[in-house]
Amino acid sequence: MRRFKNNYKLFIALMTFWLLLNMTLRPLNLIAGVLICLFVTKFSEGILYNYRGFIFKRINIKIMIPYTFNLIKEIYVSSFSYIKRIIKKDCQPFITEIELRVKDPLIIAIISNSITLTPGTITVNADGNKLTVLSLKDCKEGPETVKKEIRENFESYFLKG
Image (cartoon, rainbow, N blue to C red; front, side):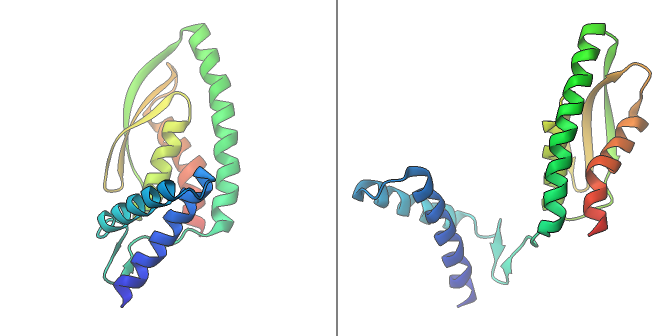
């Protein structure tokens, strides 16, 4: 019964999203939506949920709202800094490995994507809670600066909650 309940919730959420994106109730569109949502629901088992329920915990909205504003700020600040580095031609790419203190795979994915969204940094690999980050910083700055920025600007929000 529990397995059906999780499948049902995911199917309804996907179908609602499908209808909102397509904004039409034509029969062919509804049939395509149902088939695609059933397919995604079936193959999400074991990835999003198992027989006990959803695998990922919810992230507190009180954490995500300030985090989102901080991410937008970091993207803008980094973009102007990155433009300055390109014009001055005083930047050097380097790779940094950082071990995050958070263990939740969803939070690690959020941090990893946030790093990639920030100009001048790309998450190259994620292995457990270890991230490999390619960074293009000032020649004066090194890997420790990148680690500190990631911990302060991204990871710290999830350690509070």
